[in-house]
Image (cartoon, rainbow, N blue to C red; front, side, top):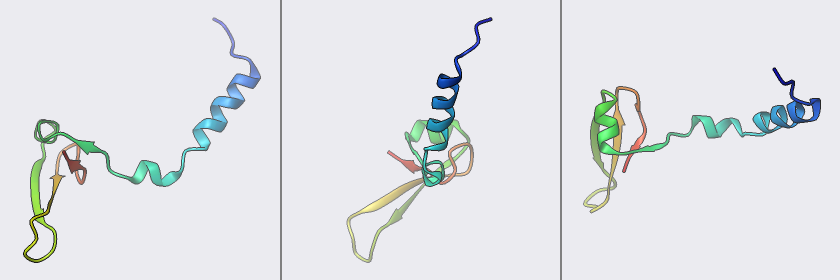
Length: 69
């Protein structure tokens, strides 16, 4: 088994620590089929009063709270 050089291990550790903590907390976008396959339901909500825009979120299952494309 080959041993990684100390410099490479240090670089890997530094890059892992450099990821902002909020990036992991942000939901990812999933497709409708991924939401349903993961055991969730697609919830469609209107944005604003009398508005033509809406949001789609996956609720429940593996992709809970993620935006549906």
